[in-house]
Length: 419
Ligand SMILES: NC(=O)c1ccc[n+]([C@@H]2O[C@H](COP(=O)([O-])OP(=O)(O)OC[C@H]3O[C@@H](n4cnc5c(N)ncnc54)[C@H](O)[C@@H]3O)[C@@H](O)[C@H]2O)c1
Image 1 (tube, rainbow, N blue to C red):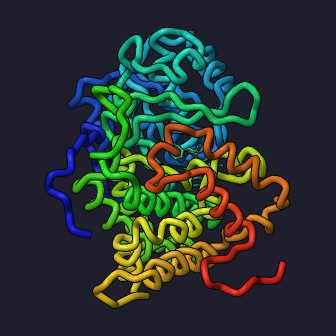
Image 2 (cartoon, rainbow, N blue to C red; image 1 turned 120 degrees about the vertical axis):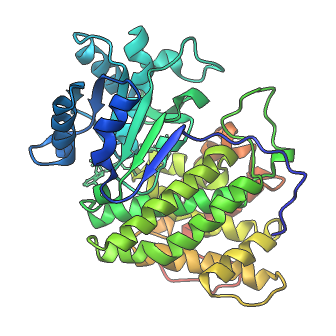
């Protein structure tokens, strides 16, 4: 698409990004340089085991004279209750000067909320859905071990509420990491399924933010410092590059876990996607995926995968230019003029890529039945902060068409597939 030079830009990112194989070893010297001489390391048992990166990092910090307490009981999809338990477990230690997060999006999100609760001792729930923070958080230093969520770059932390079903967000630009240390070597131990889930999450972030609402049409609801505010020339640039990197490296990172070029390619893809969606925001894919996760208890990447191609196809009219550009990046469309066929080719390519890394592309194969589709649409519409950025009118009808197509695994013009 042609860049609209009149589009407003509100762009937020972490203060520092350090990227590259092995860069995690620079962290103790960097923390000393920044005057951060005490930390809590928030991670899980896998990373804290002897010889693994968490144990090595804690050891290196102590050797550098930096005090380090360790919380190693993080769980996938952390809950508000787990956050409160972590706050309690760490309450016996002096308040640290920073919080270090080591792990996937789950560990980073828990650490983000701890940057608040370790200051106040208040329950995590007291920070959910508030328009501005009552106090500053501790500085967050994040070391992602998956290439997907880019939580280290975003203003939000997603936790599971008391009902065990709903995901709630703690959101503020101050929750973005002060320092993101992105070391692709940390992702080499990811099992293939985690690589696939995270990689498709990165691709969904890139594509969704590439085709989201323009910044000039985004409703900031009077927020002077919005976390998300629509696409602009800067976010589009990062999204485009991220899509290109996902197309080039996702399959290889999945099939050859030790392939460092592919791992670095996907780490960079996740970073660029975060720099795009972390300011532009998301819409229909993530809105529908949250409801799907509540119904199926499938992972974040899998639920995004199941709807992403169908959201693309549904927006073929409104976002034809952008979708044809995606198809050109994939090498499946060469016409310089945008056409519906080009937009469809982009959705088909993305669906094939998702299937090639073993993730589902049909809701009916995820144990869902037709009766559950209206509830899924309702749940998606209920995520107002995302649905308001869906770049088409009549979201209820459009979401209904998306889930119907996703249920059957059928893109426009395709013959019915047998169940
Ligand atoms: N805050 C945000 O902006 C944001 C954005 C997207 C997703 N999320 C959240 O992030 C979570 C998903 O994060 P994720 O996809 O990174 O997965 P994850 O953090 O839930 O990890 C999945 C599994 O992989 C393991 N794992 C992670 N890295 C590994 C490695 N290098 N080697 C071996 N095992 C490893 C974990 O221990 C866990 O068992 C969800 O809870 C989602 O809601 C947050």
